[in-house]
Image: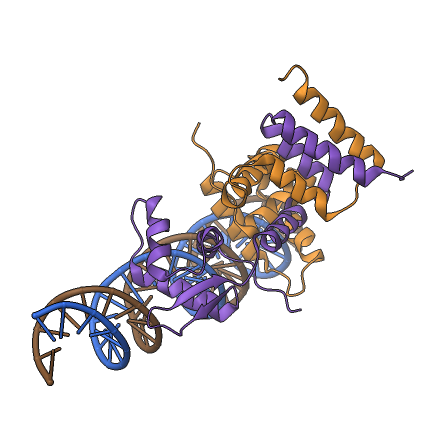
Length: 129
Length: 129
DNA sequence: GCGGTTCTACTAATTTCTTCGTTTTTAGTC
DNA sequence: GACTAAAAACGAAGAAATTAGTAGAACCGC
């Protein structure tokens, strides 16, 4: 499996929109993106990103209808794994625990969240020396 | 306090070198970087990065001697916080717990590491409803 | 069928990042 | 003081990413 390229900042924004709702048209995604942007993006700009991303294999296009629709070709989970792994290499010398401690240091968690993490930790260390 | 810009990939590589040893000269950092690079970087390339980063305020320059020496103007911790926060926003809707679960899912931790995380979790949830 | 609308494709300008060659400055050596 | 070796500054090319204008095709209502 040839790994897909790491999405750029803009590509990621589009993937986020697609993960929320897909398939989606260029116009739909454009509107979603422009809700949180001051200089709004032109339609053709967003279209261009879709063309590039189709080329790269990050999204798939359905051109059965005149108005093409797009879907993500990578899952949120895969992408998160990829990007966390990347950050890990670049900034934490691969130390997962350091990253986790760093992340935990930034905010307080709810009890439920903490419990969930505890659970995973317990699973991981069970039976280890 | 005007936040400093997010370092680019190359700038980050230089910061990593400086965090390991500073102050350091251009040549020293160049040699460090080139240990793990196949097309090695030219001296002037590395120098250019230092000039840009000085401009941006990411490093400080000591030009007392003819051979200038540089030190990081941002700490590893600050940078890590910045970049983790960035990833959090961009990919995890700000959910620290989701990021942590994702990170923990990638590798098994040593017992010591797990214990350290447990400790922090306990501190954080103490006295919470 | 025709005019307006909306879509995709094409092309290209702009910006940011990376890279390095050339020139200038500096400090030491004879 | 001129010569050389090393460093810094400058300028600019190349590459990647972002942005958008324009042209041509497809559809819709009349």
